[in-house]
Amino acid sequence: MAESPGPVYFTDENTLGLGKLLRRSGRDDVLYPGHEHLPEVPLGTLDLDWMPIVAERDLIVVTRDRRIRTRPAELRAYREHGIRSVWIGAKQDLGPPAQVELFLKHESRLQREITKRGQGPWALAMSPSGVRPLKLRGIY
Image (cartoon, rainbow, N blue to C red; front, side):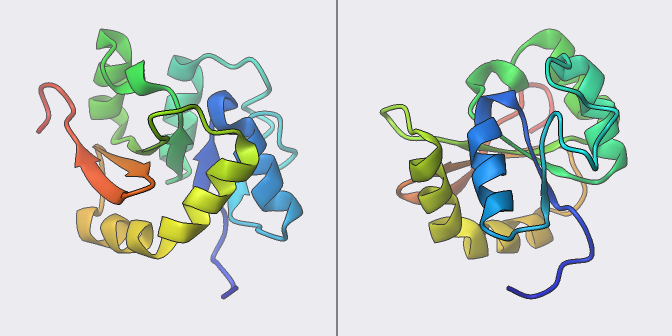
């Protein structure tokens, strides 16, 4: 793996297992709630509390929470903080090992989308068929 400039991804509590498995595999570009390098986001931190911190650190959120980008307060936070996120999933619920497999399979496409889209707010979906944009109500 090429050396990264620092953490790139934030896996929320819905994808905590994904974040931990990626870290255990040697990845140093992933943080999650409760990680020692992210002390301001302990386990149990509410979405609206971690969103500005993650945005300030310029991290891309990886989540399974479909509603995070549609609830009025979270949608407002997307706009205000320029949140960039990737919803990872499939028709059936994926456990952490399957999430890791899916993430690694499409990570190069994800990196191209990150570069293409630049600053947020934006949201993508990663599924077995690939990576595609998601609509953010009132944004695009």
